[in-house]
View 1 (cartoon, helix red, strand yellow):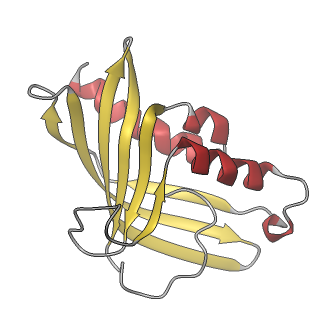
View 2 (cartoon, rainbow, N blue to C red; view 1 turned 135 degrees about the vertical axis):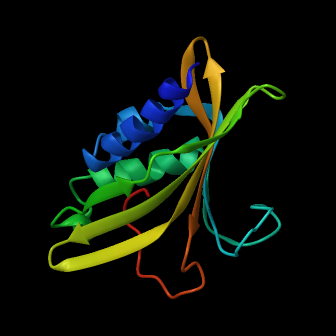
Length: 157
């Protein structure tokens, strides 16, 4: 994988979310991939410490089915989102453990009807190469205001 492949992956992943292509986005995850939003600054453990979200493929599938469901009244009107990303920084090219690591600053906007929510922080991607394709081993979202009260985050940052 080249540096450009890694950077393009991060931008393309955000594009799938903005276009609400949930199944295509979920397909980017490795079988043991995790989507994590820590509850504390510099949190190290998603299992023994509480998190805002810590989801495997099963939980991502449940959320995606809810979002796509015709009887999901909390999604009328449908939520929409937009990711504004800085250029991702490559932290590791996987030399030691085969895991490519990137960190990207973001501003995320989610809207439904006349409600507008904005979140900002950093996304950490841990990517692995599976048969020539990049897959998400872990996507960690560190919100700058992690300790503030939140309304429901309906979509995926």
